[in-house]
Amino acid sequence: MHKMSLALLAGASLLIAAPGNALAIDGPPRSEPRVIYSYQPPPPAPERTAYVQRANMGGGFIEFLFGDNPQQNYQREQIYQQQPDYGYGGRRALPPMDSQLQQEEAADPAQRPFDPKYEKQVVDYRGKEGPGTIVVDTPNKFLYLVQGDGKALRYGIGVGRLGFTWSGVKTISAKKEWPHWTPPPEMLVRRPDLPRHMEGGPQNPLGARAMYLGSSLYRIHGSNEPWTIGTNVSSGCIRMRNEDVIDLYGRVNVGARVIVI
Image (tube, rainbow, N blue to C red):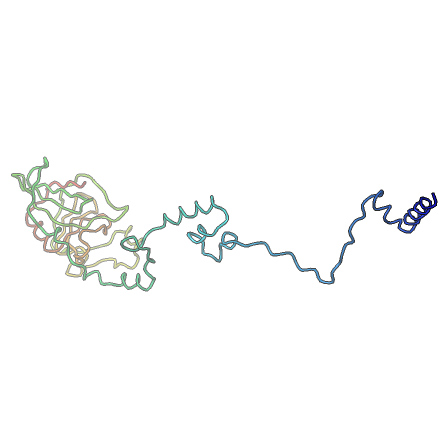
């Protein structure tokens, strides 16, 4: 009995001496103390990808490899693949620099070799036009003088540039050797630097011969610029090399039919 009383007294003393332990068992849990440091490290910077930095990556294929938007990068890669290829054999190259273009443009056109297909030659002709008819094939830059028997003389020509080509049926209304030239008012509006009148001669743009077409301002004439044969260069006239227009001039008469297609 005496020993039991001592045990009860000892247990009571422990409860009185450590009230915190009783609260830890029966009361609400205590929160951990918050520790405040004198230096707080900044939060880590967000990760930046090539897609966000595309202005520095150059776009295109680099973005496609490293970007973070697959759908948009796929579209950009398709655009990249569609860019023109300036090289050969599938290798991409840069277009010519301005200085190179200037050198090419500065090349003397008079040194351009004459294409032999524009030389005067006898060819087969299967059209329905009779002998003596002139047929002007504007798209292919050829003039045919029908000979009969399925043949024609073919000459190379220069024709009207874009916006100045025409088609129709005319007759040769006049023929002139070494014609003089008076630019029409419409041409002077476009080229005010041209002379108002120019006598016939080797420097005249109408060349050695001219055959006038009806009442129009159009002519079949020679040229002091033979390198323009085979090109779209005139204001609607049909130009030939001087040696060719002299040959044609001697073969046709006033009243000959001219078909321009």
